Length: 230
Image (cartoon, rainbow, N blue to C red):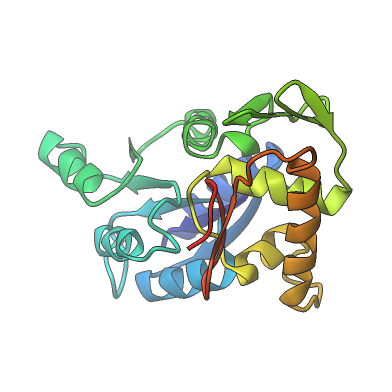
């Protein structure tokens, strides 16, 4: 499934420019026009990246950024702050609030798409293609292959997508709901315990031959890729 970018912007013309250019490059998009709606959509849709305008009705963009960084679920979601403010002190405020990048209006649409790709590549390598590794596990996303300690690992399509999600942000805990949304999509009804079934299959494949378990089960919260149980 293509990465989802949430555009938080109250100027319709800016929204259309961003949507058109991002979707032309293969991204899915969603839109919020004020801070309260943004917080609601982030909770509902689990976007892969947020383009967040500083000046918003209701709750400001910088306050939205602060609130997202305070929540375990969104503390590592990539955020690009978008604003007409160009002073160094404003850029510092945005970055200190937790933004991963800062783009000043007016901007080139092609530059914005490049910034989105760069931040996503840095924060979520699994969404950018190529190879990604964690410990002795290597995923070749172009060749659709998984290797652990030099040995090919054979995964079903669902287990492959699960591993891609987990390895893209290692040590981040994904709830069952988040994994359902990312693997099956929001429009498909699947019970949460289905996630547990596929996690067991993924574990069995990765741990074949007595290898150490890299998938951590966080009771009452979900799963992450970093090894062990708590």
